[in-house]
Image 1 (cartoon, rainbow, N blue to C red):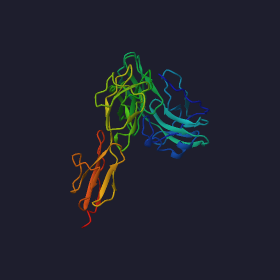
Image 2 (cartoon, helix red, strand yellow; image 1 turned 180 degrees about the horizontal axis):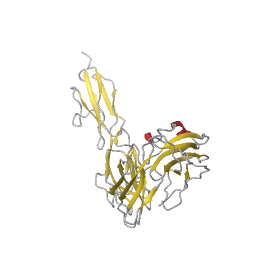
Image 3 (tube, rainbow, N blue to C red; image 1 turned 60 degrees about the vertical axis):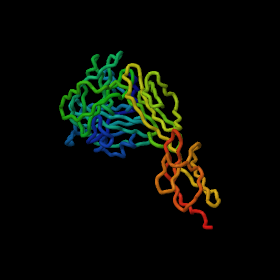
Image 4 (spheres, rainbow, N blue to C red; image 1 turned 90 degrees about the vertical axis):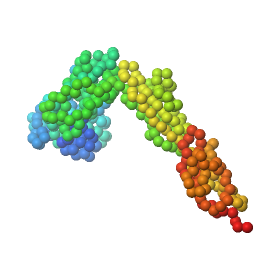
Length: 372
């Protein structure tokens, strides 16, 4: 597995926190008991660790890791401990995003820390919560001897055994815990389970749901209706995955074109995608309509009696279709790129073109011929 090394810590010891902070918590729950501004401006922190009732707890393990770090449980993890009354201090961190974790085996918490240049050392209070245990199994792809399982947002994880079994401690909080299974070949958040845990609970998840599948392909910009051609990007979060696509509505497969550059969509198109990577199950088939419609028509009086009107859209190659009886025009309405005004009233028109969606309906009021 690719692991990004821990950024250099010019440190004394560690912490920042959250009354609702815990492994896998949502950002809105991450720093409830702390000074939120401090979490955005600090270059270090000085903290007191307490239990959920506010009683100081000493001799807890504190770990600070870069958020992109993946640490093997068998490797040495840089860590620190609170003193006997739960105090800890960390200073001189390099600028960047970190994850702080505190645990003693039965209690723990986890929260984010953003370090910016010129920030000040801040005092925080951090509350730990009871721990639970999660067990499960991930089905290993062919050629993969074991996998890494991690709490989303957490720095500490575990390797599975050769059968894909794992057991991992989890800090219990107010929000769901999200487990991620990742291939030993790639740091990929592929599969996940979301759960609520009770203190001291040992939860057996059984086999995780399809954790080694290439994730869905993202089609951008958002599918929708546009009045101009669109440059469409196809992306996947899985490095090295190959994206196949079709533009004719057919089902993509191994022989379909491979995406290697932005798609220039100039007419209404159903884009279908499918991503593959060796050792992983293919992504689900995805599809999205990108619709291009004719731009709105304009009415240009050309003079004469009776008046002659040119009706046109700036979409090259399009034509206008009109009604003069108050009904909405359709593709079956009379062609009216130019029309003579034989009576006073409304003209309603749309622009049409093969392969494009009809324009919106526009209308204009015209006076009929002058009386003799």
